[in-house]
Figure 1 (tube, rainbow, N blue to C red):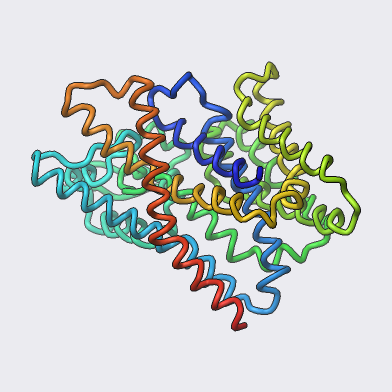
Figure 2: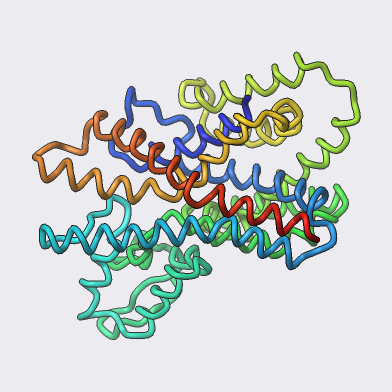
Length: 371
């Protein structure tokens, strides 16, 4: 049971990266590397299901992926709105956000933001698509129009502030990959390799030309598609390995080493630039072994299924728990707060899993069986 544990650890790495202080100062590889690791895993899974389940229906694949992501997102979006409105009724303050302004930004923008940018931000919140583009936009004042910028962090008003579920920018990238995945999984290995090198190498070229690493090498779809392709290449290796008589000691050993690498990432004494590259390569190389070892273990699948609800609900938990701490005069700059966020996020994620994710999965499975 390791692939599910790995996905859980990666989701927790994102959560921990968004709290001021982590329990025992344990931050693993941080949120950036964790998200890109998820892109690699997603590439592997999409190649697998496209070959095993959706080889003949593009429409079924797209709609089922939509049913996988969107219902949970909408529930968290509505809960965020409800929590903010309820808090305003009780205390006169909207739900605070550690990462983004959330609904506060909409309330404060009436004096400087035009109606069409507001409409764009509302549509982004509703439909997810375009949320990654907020990292490349600024607000021109006083007229309140939007414009493209190379450095979103230098803006006094950042469009990211208008996302109520701000971490969903990565879902926008994920959805774009889904639309092209059925085509690129058919590419030859050499063409996939060229695409991967061009994508990831392009990020370094952009940095060399003075563009900030965030967002150009982290949230820019052309420089992220390489991570998905790396996952597809890992699936190609799985197709080869699954017909070989591999010992459980081999698959299990490789899997446990990868989980250890993930959990102990911050303590490994290698320069960061080399360590992150080693992590991505090690993950891609180990995915076939991890999948072979754990693909028939139901508990592993359940543990792994918690990763998406954890990822999508944790900012809401950060806001709600942060308000509770401040209302009672307690600091959020403590490991107690960080630990509380982790525990409450896992509990909220389990509820989402049972109430939203699993029922939708049953619907998706029935649709897949009817094709």
